Length: 107
Image 1 (spheres, rainbow, N blue to C red):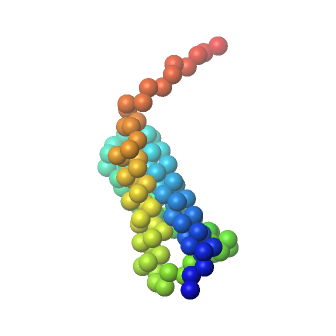
Image 2 (cartoon, rainbow, N blue to C red; image 1 turned 120 degrees about the vertical axis):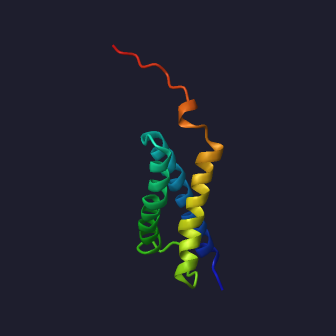
């Protein structure tokens, strides 16, 4: 039987990873000049960050629950948040070029 605290811990990890993936995608889209560079970094750099975060959150902090297999862990706490974070940034946030920044005031 799965406890309520374990489910809440798993949902917390998924939510935090989605936030990390969305912010990292936005940061890479703003900083990199090419679209391919952003895609490559999102596919290879962000999953490493999510993997390390999973080790910290589920190891010493003990959040989450036993999912039964490594594939389930990868799908639920890395692939799903990565997909959701990328989708949130690309489809729901305005493109970085469309955002107007205020003029800086030099004193």
